[in-house]
Length: 395
Ligand SMILES: Nc1nc2c(c(=O)[nH]1)N[C@H]1C(S)=C(S)[C@@H](COP(=O)(O)O)O[C@H]1N2
Ligand SMILES: [Mo]
Image (cartoon, rainbow, N blue to C red; front, top):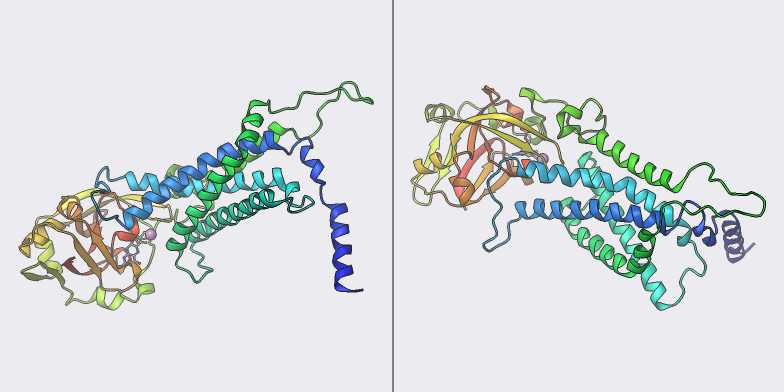
């Protein structure tokens, strides 16, 4: 049998087995359900996109007057927690929405003219981009790096593809959406010839919406415990619920970054390079300076966050020792990974709560939390709270 005959045969089998496009109008699937799930999905995806933009621009500030505030200290913790949570919530919604329109995908003819073809292509782009965002986001939170590209850049760029395709999709479907949302969820029961009147059996459309809602609930409850700690008993999939040393999870250990030897060296000194003067301070020098204690969260971009008591020397005081006004500074770790350098804005450098921390929750900083000294500042991603500091310099 030739390849061509075989393909024809396969497609005939598929045509018999797969639900018919006409069955799109079957009891459970259809625009009444799709539009309602779509409305929820638009909300969760929209929130996810906006909070994602916030996270991006906090880490890559735009030139110009726009500034991310240094207070309240917990704000980034909330926006990023919402980002991850709304992303998780979108997964079951997208799954049910795809299910509700699935028979349309294998409709014949596959492309019915130019406009129809373009629309179907835009939906393909939408599914691919949204799927990519949710999958890579989820894997990143799970710390599975199964790709070669730099995740934040790809996640940022594809977000615009996804949102563009969603906006286009909503615009095209607006008449259908309007009609569908105006209709009641359950079909009016029409008496049929053999049964008077027909009774709904099994799953109802309301049941489908309920399943989607339950999926959201289960997804959120099983993952949110690393931000809402009282939920951690049910959050079996929460990342880093457990505590590391000193009651705080560890994202990268000293051993993993190869910084152990330098960080434990007794001859360690922190270099503070002002524009005109440079000072070197041992740990004893730092401890001899006036200490400040603040309660600030570590809020990882991956969504987990924990409040802790930090104690150390305000950055502005260290800059003053180098005869330096608070300006934008570069805080450099002794290890050279992507998290090894963190930029601190002039505004944040002037904030008294921006510390070079020496203690955590009342104890000397653990090696894995950045001993001998680490940066902790209000309202910023954990990734920018550089550990194992070696040098602070004017940017
Ligand atoms: N030098 C350095 N600092 C770092 C990191 C790192 O890998 N290297 N990880 C960052 C990330 S992603 C987070 S979330 C916080 C976590 O701090 P913790 O390990 O003390 O909880 O440290 C940040 N500081
Ligand atoms: Mo992080």
